[in-house]
Image 1 (tube, rainbow, N blue to C red):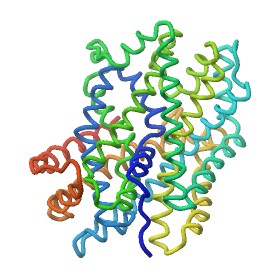
Image 2 (image 1 turned 60 degrees about the horizontal axis):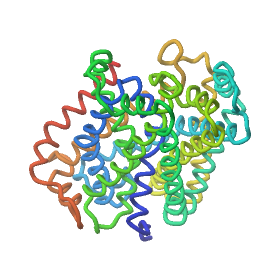
Image 3 (image 1 turned 180 degrees about the vertical axis):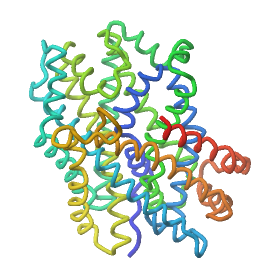
Length: 453
């Protein structure tokens, strides 16, 4: 059977960017920026994307296009006889399952909040305690948590069951266009608020005082970690889209296009949040609760807040769902290729597996709240996110890097030839020194810091 390809280059860019654009941009990026000093963090985040994120993304796409299969079999097609690089493919598959076990739960929160704003559950005149209570009530309800999580799972797998072109590519194109329109509308609204420019200044202008308060090394490593999380690197989520590509365009150029679109959404999400925070005198370093406890208070205080709140959580849902269906595509393709089942069969089997796998996270705030794996106050979500963000993403990225540069793996020349195939930017010879000796050290620093932290 011939391998399905993207219908258009635009489809590839939007689907790949959709995989990158998700919770990392619209939930994690704003609050991590807030707690890491604003503008100085954004500066190092962009630097990290350029010097670390884009090269690794190029490698992951190259392994996919060169191997023409999902992670396990792509490695097998490219590795030297007798070598075991394909074992990383199994970790990629496990990482995608683990990511979806909590990603779908957080996306369920977004659907819940969209419904509450749309139906008037959030309304003008609510106190801060009432808004905080809404979040606590949602987390404390096992039924609500499970229903919204599984609704997200089923929706994502139904889309993927229709195939690459008829399902994933067609739906993602519509969602991404809606997402980009919504984010621009919301950003313009925030920038017109009184005091908005103070928020923009905090967000985009580096402040030496913030460096002293937070710590330069902590800011840099946090920015590096966020660059990998936002691009979904290291677990094969991007590799699968490389396997659907022909050789018409060079992969370095395509990786840059994906990173630019991903960064545009992340930066614009901050332009929604930080001007609003400063306009309504809300601390921008509220942490993970920024989206679900702080912003609803802002929306219920502003004119037309119910409409803008509905738009905002619809935007969050589109961003998260674009990642979910992209990762589901990788899971389903891997499963079909390894076990020889059809796409429809893979969808049904994986729907059951992911529904069951997501239950610990969905119940971790209520029925299983006594299980605190990382210490007092931690949850199942914290453990799953720690494993993915601090281990699987950076370690997986290091393995891709070693595979593409070492003589025991695919080798730099083979990687360079595949990544440079087609029209567009080529991987230059001078990058070999940086990719072989310097970038691995940066990744090791990130891994050690993540484990220590």
